[in-house]
Amino acid sequence: MNPFLFLFPFLFLFPFLFFTHESIAQQTYSGNTVMDCDNSDKTGPFPSFLYTCNGIQSCSTFLIFRTQPLYDTVFTISKLMSIDHMDVARINGITDSNAILPLNKELIIPVTCSCYDQYYQANTSFVIPTFYDTYFTIANLTFQGLTTCDSLEKYNVYDRLDLHAGDKLHVPLRCACPTVSQTNDGIRFLLTYLITWKDSIKKISKRFNVSVHDLVLENGFSSVEEIFPFTTLLVPLSTEPLNSQTRTLGRNRNWNLSKKAIIAGVLSGGFLAILCGVFVIYLISKREVNKGKTVKWALPKDIQLGIASVDQLFKIYRFEELEEATDGFTLEHRLSASVYKGSLKGRKVAIKQMGSHANKEVKILQKFNHFNLIGLYGVCEHDKASYLVYEFMENGSLNKWLQDLNCQESQTWNNRIRIGLDVAKGLQYLHNFANPAYVHKDINSSNILLTKDLRAKISKFGLAKSTEKGENVNSSIKCRFESKGYLAPEYLEAGYVTTKTDVYAFGVVLLELITGKKAVYENDDDGVEVMLSEEVASIMGDEKNGKGKVNYLIDPRLQARHAFGFVIDQDELALRMVKLSLGCLESEPSRRLSMNEIVSTLMMIQMDAQSSENIFMV
Image (cartoon, rainbow, N blue to C red):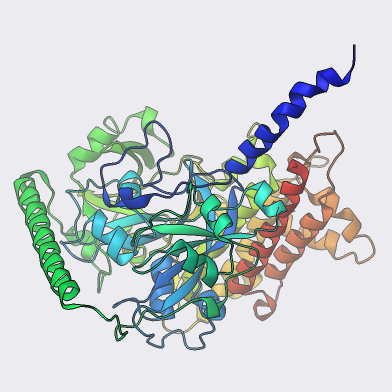
């Protein structure tokens, strides 16, 4: 029998298999479904929510945002997006982050995009400013279609008819990462472009120098179909987008409108205004009907004590609500001595019982608005005790996660690098963008919590200190057991606190991610207590053998094997991580890296690690 006959069916199927693989690269254009806030994704991902995970798990990418009142400077827009204003200024060629920009000027926004709950998203948070705001207006007016009302309702605890000024929302922004096939074809970024009036596929492809074919394929069109304002397209790019590719949508253009067009515009605008008015009246009436079911929105007096100004309000829970959420604070719901897991309106929360010192935690957390800092949903005062209601972190603390020898997720460099980057971004926000800036003072792997999707958030702000009166401050030395091994020399010696105190502690956390060891551990041979930072510094300080011993430092669980069985050499990646950590652990504070430098370095390491992983996946 001819052996080639066996190959014939496979040769026939091969083109179809190849086409199927390429079609996975497509996302589906949402069309006007994003304007309908009643879509469901119970049967699978739906385009009116976000873009579907179908490629790299995490990547650096870009969004387009247009200036508007309240968000008309690089600084205010960066704060809205929870990113570094210097990155936005750099890529847009702007020197003054506080300069007021022209209305409707397009800005390129660099973000980190990650897969979570089957959707890609770049995360930020937003405090609802007025009673009249809804998921629809926040998605389509404030964020201009970069998120959707469906996704806002999906990822927040608040019902659409129970939104209040002061509610802090988690906002997932629309983004996507290339597939392995696309990266092999040279596509590095998928730019999320905001469609506006007069836009067309051909105009967009010409502006970004992308073929119509690639643009149509990436967005799942069968042809050059109609596109709608307030929706987004993905633009595949081989290089970073250029400032010259953006534009300013001016008001004084010569549109050459006819009388009929003007009249039609006025009538349609008036009709839209009437509809909006009816919708607002409907919402107000609904909320008035439900007023008896809601809780009074005012902070308890004990919590108000010492708070000069409240930047954002929290929901005030009744104690009965928390009892019901935790089945009466039973042992089955206890996570630690004072923390319980519960469920409020179907959303998991963590409820922490605190004493009279809770006001400091509330005072600090009400100032923050960042994805990588733990979210505080609300407070409760009962029987001289305070209860704080936080977002629930499914994977617990980083410390316990690293020590779980059976956890498969901890055995990848990409997960550990992403966790380190998340912590770095949280500290970067505290040091540079919080107003006033803060030093956390208690960074350690027990105070870093992980979501279900292994996104890291910094918690426990009881020791945090403002730098408002000057960066160099002295502080009483409070050394808890969990802090041992993380404290900077200048703090131990003189109680001297600066932002570099956090940098030192972060360097130790990086070493934990690299080695899988605790900050302080007992040597297996003689039981002597070992400081992880001192051990690594000693090994790497040996100029002759230090580099060769990097493999000795790496957590054995991170050893990766190729599909053909051989061990993949990752010493270079580990060496870069170790050098970064040592740059944080300099004994002299002024010689330590800044959090801006750390974030930039980690993002480069992350991109290279992902590229390496993709090569071995092929």
